Amino acid sequence: MCVLTRSSGPEERAAQPRFRLLYVGFTAIVLLYFVRFVGPGIYGGLNNYDPMNIYSFWIRGPGQLIRNLVLFFTTYGRPMGGVYFGLLNTAS
Image 1 (tube, rainbow, N blue to C red):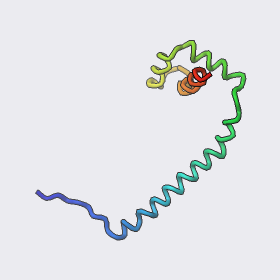
Image 2 (cartoon, rainbow, N blue to C red):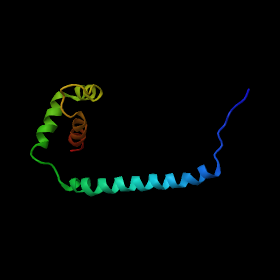
Image 3 (tube, rainbow, N blue to C red):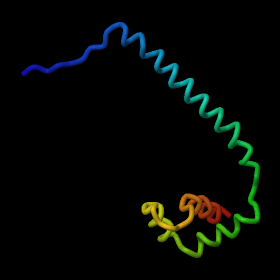
Image 4 (spheres, rainbow, N blue to C red):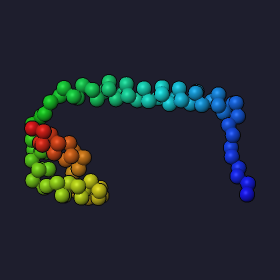
């Protein structure tokens, strides 16, 4: 029985740190972009529309929310928003 293994040559081993540096650089750019544009929203607080959303998800119940998280081709509006507002309601 012959088992073929692939050994990495010196040129492949030299390319690995370059790919790792590219990966780390790209990840840093995406995180900086995210923090730059999404970070200020942390201090936004709740607006007048949020209590209505909290109530609409609360009245439907967690069973329907979980069902529509899995069945995402339904008319249920923003099930991940329901998770967010449900956690806000529980925390308050």
